[in-house]
Image 1 (cartoon, one colour):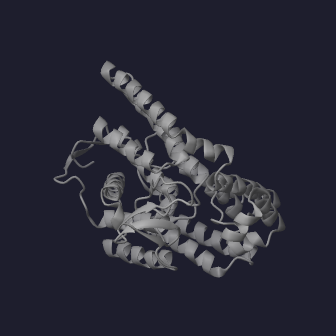
Image 2 (image 1 turned 60 degrees about the vertical axis):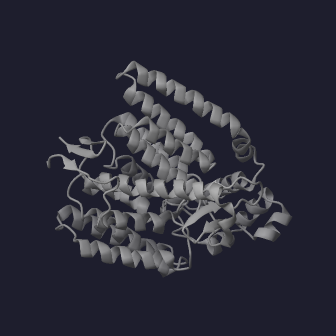
Image 3 (image 1 turned 45 degrees about the vertical axis):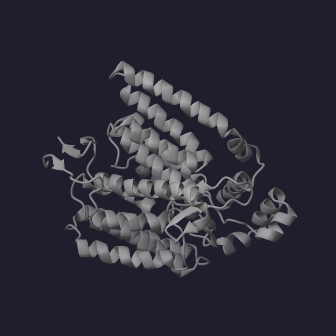
Length: 410
C-alpha cells in the first residue's frame, strides 16, 4: 500500500473529482434542458477514457457479458419500452463501470469525499447569499420552481408557504440531503471536527427534508457507536448534540407532520407512488416492467385511479396527471427489473466497497441510501451504479483513514 498522502488544499481538485461531480449532476443535478443526461453521459465517458482505464481481467469480461445479455433479454421481454431507454441504461452502466476501472486503490473514497465537500460549500454559499441579498434571486422554472442567482446558486420556491428550501446543485432538496448525509457519514468516520459535523447538519436542516431529518438520526447513532468507548467528553458532547437535534425537530415539527399526515402534496405524492409501486409489482413480480416512463404508467387504469383517489380534481387539473412523475426509487428497482434482480442489486449495494466490513457501518450506510430511495427515483442513475458495481472492482476500504489534511493507508 502507498504511504501517507499529503494534501496541501482543502479540496484536492483533479480530473477524478471533476468526473465525479459531473456524475452527481447527471444523476441528481438541476435539469437545465432536455437531453442534459445524454450529453453529460457522452462527456463523462470521453473524460473517463481520456483518463485511462485499467487492463481488463476475466471478472470484468464476465460482468460486461452479463450486463449486455441482461439488457438484450430485457429489451426482448419489454418491447413496449422505447429502445432509447435501454441504450441510455447501457450508457449509465458504462459510465460507472469504466470510471471505477480507472481506480486501482482506495483513492475513490477520498475523491468522493472531496467532491461532496464542493457540493457542501456550494450549498452553504448559495443559501447564505439568499438570506443576504434575496432581491437578486429571480424565479425560474427548469425541472422545478427555483429562485436563482445567475443560474449558479439555487433555492426551491415552494408551492405554498414562505420557507425557501436549500437545494444546492440538486434538482430536489431531498437529494441534497442525501449528498450531505453521505458526507456527514464519512466525516464522522474520519474523525472530522465537531464544527464541520455540526455545519453539515445545519445544511441538511436547511433542506427541510423529512428523510434528511431521519437520516441525521442514523448518523447520530453512528457517531455515538464509534465514539462511545473513546473519551468521556465525546459522549457528553454527543448527548448535547442529541438535545440540540431534538430542539430542531420540535421547531420544524409542523413540516414533518404535514408530510406524515397527508396535508401537503409532497407526502401525498410519496403515498401515491408507494401504492402504484405495489400495484406494478403484483402485476409483474418476476420480470418487472422495464424502464417505463410516465406514458406507460398512465396506460395502466389503476394508476389513474390511484392518482384521482389521492389528489383532488382541482389539483390534477392544475398540475396534470401523475404530477411529479413516479418518485419511488426503492420500489422502482423491483418494478423495473423484477423482484429477483432487484433483490440481487440491493444485496450487492449492501456489500459495496466504500464502507468497511463492520456490520453496523454497512447497515447504517445502506439505510442512508434506502431511506432516500423511497422518495427519490435515483436508483436509475450512474451515481447509484457506482455503489452497486464497486462490489466487484474496489478493494475493501477498512484501512482508509482520512483525518485532518492527511490520508493514511495501513
